[in-house]
Structures are given as C-alpha cells and as structure tokens.
Length: 63
Image (cartoon, rainbow, N blue to C red; front, side, top):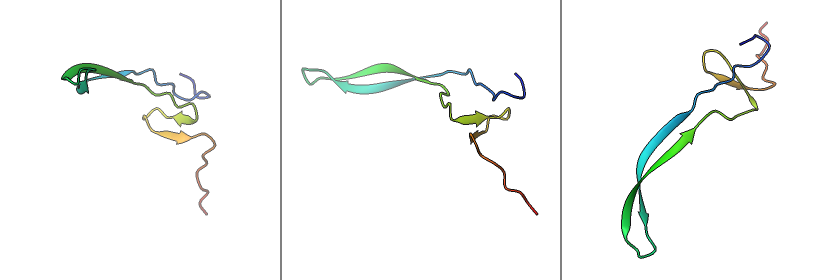
C-alpha cells in the first residue's frame, strides 16, 4: 500500500439466508440463498481506518 493510492479493500462477505419462494404449482418452499457483498465503489477514497470520502472532497480551511 502506498500513500499516493487509495486503500483498495479486497474483502468479500458472503451472507447465507433462508428465503421463501413459490413454485409454479403454487407450493411454498424455503431455499438457502447466498448473497455476495464487496466494496465496488470507484468514486470514493477509502482510508486506512475503513472510512471513505468522495473523490474531490476537501476539508474546510479554518481561520
């Protein structure tokens, strides 16, 4: 990791849940489904403390 490049998060989170569905015969069934979450935002700068700011954000100057 270098100072000139934003932190690139390589974490992927898999969430499994039981969801209720209906078949074509109108039966109710429960299925396990897995959803994948990962950081894909290319318009945000991720800091090392896992916070993010939009690109181009500037802190206000104080007097």
